[in-house]
Amino acid sequence: MRKFSGFAVVREAMRAHKGWAEQWNTPEPRKQYDVIIVGAGGHGLATAYYLAKEFGITNVAVLEKGWLGGGNTGRNTTIIRSNYLYDESAGIYNHALKLWEGLSQELNYNVMFSQRGVMMLAHNVHDVQVSKRHVHANRLNGVDNEWLTPQQVKDYCPPINIGKSVRYPIVGAALQRRGGVARHDAVAWGYARAAADMGVHIIQNCEVKGINRGSDGAVTGVETTRGTINAKKVGVVAAGHTSVLMEMAGVQMPLESFPLQALVSEPVKPILPCVVMSSSVHAYISQSDKGELVIGAGTDQYASYSQTGSMHILTDTLEAICEVFPIFSRMKMMRSWGGIVDVTPDRSPILAKTPVSGLFVNCGWGTGGFKATPGSGNVFAHTIAKDEPHKINAGFTLERFRNGRLIDEAAAAAVAH
Image 1 (cartoon, rainbow, N blue to C red):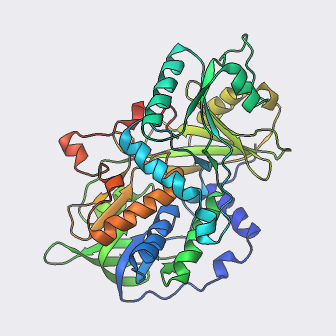
Image 2 (cartoon, rainbow, N blue to C red):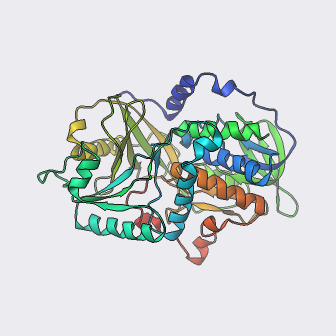
Image 3 (cartoon, one colour):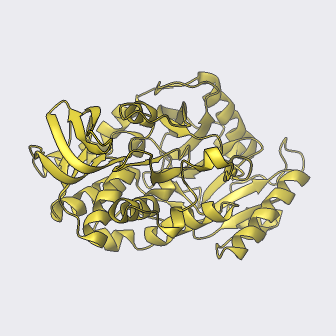
């Protein structure tokens, strides 16, 4: 198996889109901005875009220690869905999905959003009960989801083996037809271009080394490798490293960081018409527009900032894929990579103000960050601009870990991706 780092994957994509990073010159930071966003991934760039578009706040700096889209945005498996169980989760993810549906037109940039459907397989009685509970809960929240029989599963996705003699027999599935995939790095590029056109500064190679606070305790700006940059509001949107950044301001976060791996196969002609997920064998797979099978694994069992992860996780994932799709057993895997995900105790995000005046945080998405990108940026921009949460993210506060009002999506998300 050839193995490339996540950065190499992003570099390949950047070469394919030759000259993108040079389409604007990284500006010299001003001494004073209205808002600083730390992190030029999908969520950070979306936040900057909606600050400019929805609230007219264009004196914004998006600071990135590397290059835009070079973190988890370039390391995910592109899956988009909103079929989560609890009200708060369904609200934020369905808000995002609605924005996804018009995002290419909104940004005038093709993010390659393909609503090919996301199918979540059931292999036993427990899976059936859990999946049907999801279907009913989703419908009550206005989220599309439907139950399929084994034959309907086969009709929708012909490569699946629904035979009775397989190790994990397929007894049904839940299908969200509005779900699908998008081009991960194109989302970052689209938001970056649209935000930059409205005057937002995207400052790459600018690592934040400290968060400054005044005598009253409020945020005054940040210290970076390119000097001091001042602002009355700072939003931290840096997946995997949020705890480190927030500690600079004296704020402790209920987060752990874990490696999360994925891999792709050699390219083949179109064969997989939808996204397929299975919680029992923990496998999820789709096919990219280049023909590669995109396969996602689970998080490693240990906390780490490593962007590699354990080989047994990949091995277990490939075994699961071959169980569900015997037709893929002779496929060659071309490359694998890893990202770092922030995980909260209830496996749900934090989109909120912090105890420090002027400091806001967007983190804890675990493995669900990419699919939430437009919705997350939209409501986080509202929270920063209005200094209060949007009704959609009102439940995703830091205080819930003190008062016990958790959104325990960990046990409800079927597969946590």
